[in-house]
Image 1: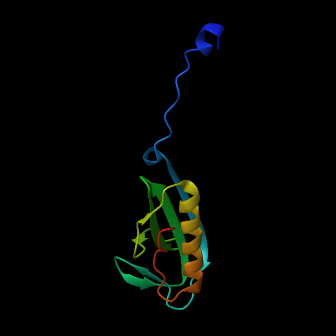
Image 2 (image 1 turned 30 degrees about the horizontal axis):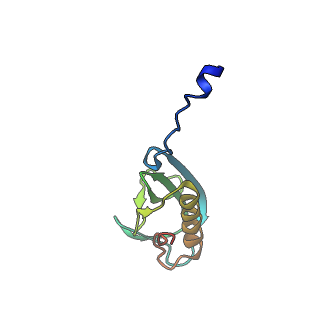
Length: 111
C-alpha cells in the first residue's frame, strides 16, 4: 500500500453468513435403543452415519446406515444456526442424540 492509498481505504462490509458453508460427517455411530427418527422412513437404528451441512444460516441434518447409499432427513431438520460454531455444536449434539437413541430428533436451535 502506498502513502497515497492509506488515506483512501474503504471499510469492508462484514461477511454475509449466507455466503458461508461447512459440513461435518461422523461415521459408525452405534445408536442407542430407538435410534433416530427420520422424516422419510421413521426411526432407524444400528450402525449409523450423521452428516451435517451448514449453509444459508441453517443446519441440515441427515443420517444413513453406515456404508449405505440412501440418506434420510433427521426429523426437526433444518435447525437455525447463525454461525459455524453453533452449527458444529448442533452436529455434536446430534451425534450424542444418536448414541442415546430414544427416537432422537434434531436438537433445538441455540438461544
